Amino acid sequence: MPIIKSIHWEQDNPEELVYKFPFNNITLGSILTVNESQEAFFFKNGTLCDSFVSGRHTLSSANLPVLQKLVNLASGGETTFMAEVWFISKLEKRNMFWGTGGLRIIDPYFQIPIKLSSRGQYGIRISDGGVFLKKLIGTIGFGDTSLIEDQFRIDVVESVKVSIAKYMKENEVNINELGSEYRGLAKETAKNLQLAFDEYGVELLNFNIEDISFDENDKGYQTVMEGIAEQARLSKLGVSYLQQKQLDIAQTAAGNEGAGNFMGIGMGLGVGNNLGEVVGNSIKQSGLTSPLTGGIPQLPSYYVAKGGQTTGPYSIDIIQSMIQQKEITATTYVYKVGGQAWILASEEPDISKILSLMMPPPPPPAL
Image 1 (cartoon, rainbow, N blue to C red):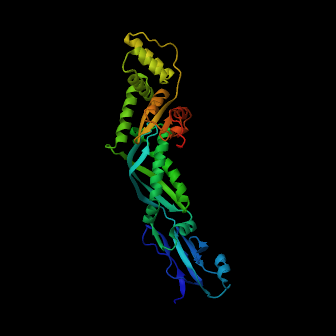
Image 2 (tube, rainbow, N blue to C red):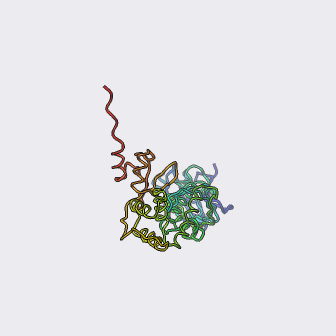
Image 3 (spheres, rainbow, N blue to C red):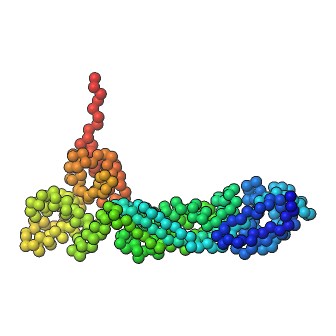
């Protein structure tokens, strides 16, 4: 077995992140050369012992304090001992690509799933070589940028998914406006992704988003785009999308029997004060006499999940009718307008009361 006098890593491939010195028989007095942007680590039986920054180091028991305790190194001479020497590169690695396809997110306004694809680039730098070696490399003995891309592919996809949905909701951005929000989205995604990278001693650099595209044949996308177009049209009239949905429900329930009946049903459906003003103004402009006096009280309304689609919103009266027709059961998911999340109908207090009246407990067993 040769006596090793020089330990170093001549890095030929800039994509390499780690290098394991091929010999384990290390001799005190050997010269360890650590180049700029490198760091060297000594392992014994899988345990990280000592580390060295850039420079030219003569190995001795003094600069190998942990190993000295483990193997009882002599204080002088050319004592040979067994240990693994690893080098890591701390150079910045850029132009690493990421991409997602067929990713589904929930549109925060319309609560409809839409399919999207996105892509971009990022860079990395090893910030904690010891953690990186222990957590990621193990017994592989090598590692390059492709290892990082493979290891963190799922984390990137999940961070992009969560960040887009969160950013859209918090900043009131619709899918038509995402193209001008790449910088903000990238910042939000990088913040979430860095949490995953921290566990492996890796620093995320310059995460960016180059493109977000949608499947135009996706029904969810088409529905949301129609909703956005309708929003734009209604905003010019001073009517919100939710108000129009409530008007549509009221009109259907009234069977188009005239303005008086229509307004009566509108009141039962929980149409808000603003809606009453809009309808009242519309009736005045049409030359009809409005029976509406004063504001209309705000009553709860609900979205209902049916066949994987979002329907509604419906007033509590319509909800009761749907329960009678068994379109809504205790296990149907509902979303209260102004609420926080989808929940079972049996867990929504107002709907639960109706269910308890409509659905008696199972009969006792036959005698």
